[in-house]
Length: 137
Image (tube, rainbow, N blue to C red; front, top):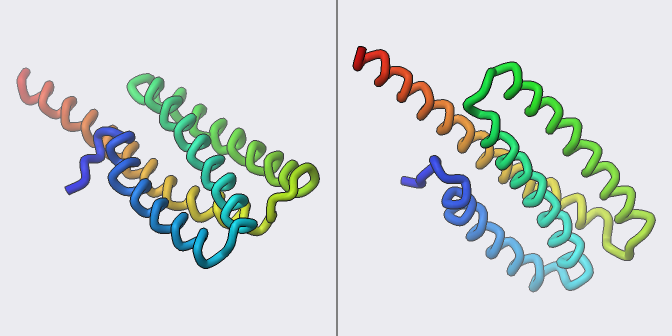
């Protein structure tokens, strides 16, 4: 069973092995041009998800309105970061744009699954603690 209470543990046990296999296959099957661009895309998605996890961890025990505002603001923040980075890759670098976007998208989808799993486990733990405290009364 994968421990979902710790995002670093979840990240290392699920994402890291998949990323190592994907990176190895991409390097040997795709070539260096596609490899470098996909790595940069995947790295951007990792950075965005870690920023989100740190932000959510800081407000998860506060009000739902504050939590929801952070999540919605985070969606807009991530959208603009991805938009600006894709434009920058296209106009200012020699990276293969399609490989960059593919690496970003595939990595981001996997990391979103892990992020949602982690957040759900945090909410589940909060509700279990609330249930236990009501039971003790």
